[in-house]
Image 1: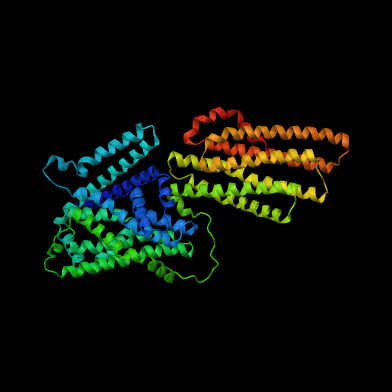
Image 2: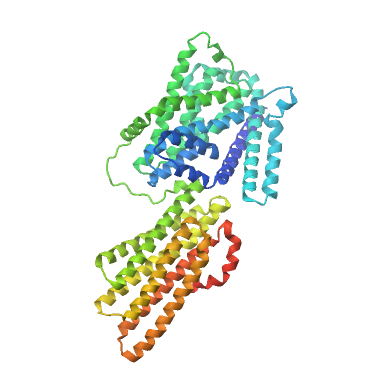
Length: 567
């Protein structure tokens, strides 16, 4: 009989954890770019950071996930340690929402309407509605909503299984003896809460299991408070594991999280212990309910935040003292792979780097144009550095995006990743042709080649058109602005036509004027590089059309696709 009780309880935990994972994944996919939008609004205001931390945690239903994301952002140099402290505090408050939802499992009444609020009544209906939405829904957001409902239904069903499995245990004397030991030994209760949460790496799930025990009347207030405090400390283990191999600042994020939970929890337990000495606080000897656990969980986190929020600066200094800078040889991180766990943030940060790469390549091309008319060794050296920078971007960002593409994402983020992957090689080729133009300009200077006024004028016209195309391509790519794509295609053909007419004209002039072969080769190389730059800009504009908002519009541009073959 006992073995079946244990198996049912373990099965309930399995359903609970799986449902939590499914629901959290659905919430994250539905949040999409909004997650990054929230972070981008973060300023020096600690209050905004606190509210954003609570809001983001409510969106993904995991304070551990938020902390791991912060570790990745700090490790990549995207956020400063100071910005993360109020976010961490807010995430602790946001994670209490789950315990309030789970407290519904403790409802018991003969009233029909109240009984409908229990998981046993609504969990199957919620899961069924979620399956229908997921299978029959055509819109991605409806499918994501179905995913959330299925996860929530499974989670609540697991909660019900745990509650039913624990109920018979209350009749066993040995089980009662064990719980009595917990009630008399708060340190042991704290350790149990810490270890159990560290093992399953979720304070929300750990609190849910505690609430299942509380529903059976097995947990007293005396044991519940230190267990909840321990659960808050145990949830830091996920971020601590993720901090292996990161830079000093990222380790300080984990340190702040741990110190905040320990100091806040101990202060709360100290005040609670003092209140127990007051005779009127006799309620602490009675069994705690699921609602009581939710209240305790909320009070611990709200109290910790209220007490330590004014000392964010001191927490930062303490983290700097604990994690000292013994050397300055820290290696810069391009994009921390921990960000992949929060796909919307990873997509947004990748887009920022891709935009920076395109701006670097475009500026490199514009600088190369100036070298054709007036060669400068300083400008040429800058072009070399830009080309190396773009090569590094393509290598590291491409690898990161391939790993990111394997994650579950909403349609918009998936298309954004694919667009960046397609565009990276074209952006990198822009810097390659900038280098080619620079080398050609160097040959022109060293060879003493002088183009005719007509040729210089025509080259200037093409360069002016290309600068306009590069500016438009930057805007189209960074803003997903499809409206300018057709103009880029038109300008690409205009540049093509102008360059080929110029090539044809100077070939005729060379036959008559006995010009050197170097003149012919240099001008031919320049015009070919110009044509290829226009073609790659055209490709980038075409990739932008392949977003969800304009997927159908690409049919009108199918005649332009051959420009990809021109290299």
